Length: 136
Image 1: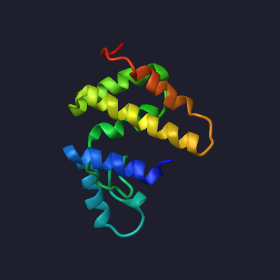
Image 2: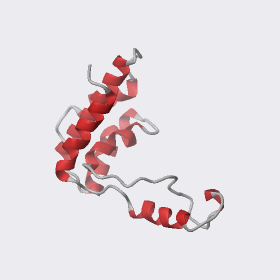
Image 3: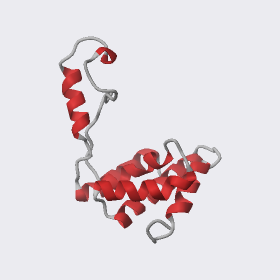
Image 4: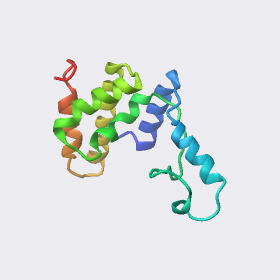
C-alpha cells in the first residue's frame, strides 16, 4: 500500500505544475509583526486574528478547500461554501472540485489504512460535490 508520505509527495508534485502562492497578505503581515516582537504573541499590538507559525506554500489553491468545508461543518452549507470560495478566489470550479474530491479520497484511504471508521463529514462533502451543476 502507498504510504502517506508518497501520496502527499505525489499530490505536491502534481500541483507544482501550476505553482501558485497561497500565502495571504495577512499571514505575511502577521509574520513581520511577530518577527519584530519579543515575548508572547498574545501581547502583540494586532487585530483579533494572528497567524501562529505561518508557512507560505506553493501549489494549486484548490487543494486547500476541503478543510474549510469541514470546519464548523454544516451539510447544507457545503455547496454554498464551495461556490463562494471558488468565486472569491477566482478558481476554476471543476479543477477545485477535483482537488477537493481527491483530498476526500486521500483522507478516506488514511482512515481505512489506520483501521478507523470512515468520517461522516468527509463522505458528506464528497456526496454533495459529486454533481456538476452550480449550486445544485
